[in-house]
Amino acid sequence: MEKLLTVVIPAYNAEAYLAYTLDSLCGAFQSSRTAGKAGDAGRQNLLEKLEILVIDDGSKDKTGEIADGYAGEYPEIVRVIHKENGGHGSGINCGIREARGRYLKVVDADDWVDPEAFLNLLAALENSQDDAVVSGFYWRFDNGSGEEASFPEKAEMKEAFKGVRYGKSYSFDNIADQVYMKMHGLTWRTEILKQMPLVIDEHCYYVDAEYILYPVPWIRTVSFISDFVYQYRIGREGQSVSPEKMVQNKKNYDRVLESLCAFYQKCRDGEISCSEAKLHYIESGIARVAAGKIKILLSLPADKRMRSELVQFERKMLKKYPGIYHANRNKAVKLLRASRYRLYWLGVWALQKSSRAF
Image (cartoon, rainbow, N blue to C red; front, side, top):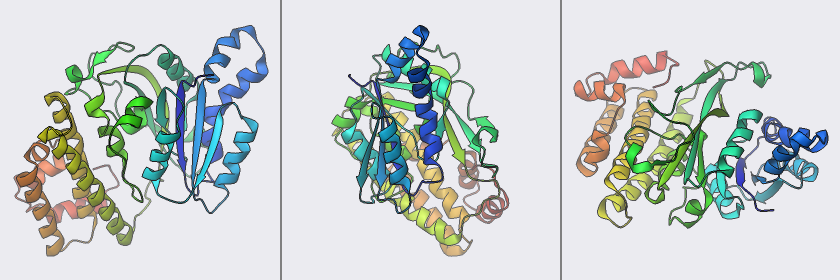
């Protein structure tokens, strides 16, 4: 049977979470398979078009064993690939290469889906010819209870954009200035991902922006559904990150930002054909990554050297990539610029005292 959707699960040392993730995807399939009711026939047929592709990225725990167990129980829909460790981006790249579904969605091994909302996504995909289908997602705040259903939830936005008509096919160029698609809400047409001449950075974190932005020059249409499909696990409140970890985060951000800017340059120079609307969308997306790097710089111990690095980074972006620099919408970055970075010290203090999002 032709597969409609491939769900790619990059997994590394995820034994504590993977079973719950897979249960959320396989649960509806299991209930339909065993119920045997005539009314379930359509649902069963839809679920049989699902492919769940677990990429075991060289895990050292029981992640691979857990995944193999589900492949044995659900051979119709679960497939496992065991590979050497290459990082989150490597897992996504492998999933794209191996995917058999007409559409592709990435679900991280510590997150999960709402089963009913996921079924609605499958139904929408079956009737869709769009290059991207976007659904809602919840942030789920891990309260340490171990009961995912009890985790507090928050939607980043209630609707995709003001006046959106769910189920309608939109020209992407016509709405590019009204939306910003997040990785957790995105389902791409697999053909675009396979054919684009770009790969996501490997041995690296923070590759979400690459997955979001690299396909943009090749997409034509996008549609939206109202369901909140993806459940995105957020670390426990008050969870701290060491300075050493933040330094590593900075290195990853630098690498991804360099790749994104090189991609943008190709779009701007015409090496990759890209409309003005799409180019502005890409500028806005990379500006978000640049703001993330500034957040990291503010998270590191404050000193004159770090402030100088921040200022030099900003000057470089303004000189080389003015479109990205001026696409910034982050209020904290705007304040820093307006103060000519005199608020650097206050920004470091405020960020380190607050657990709120930047």
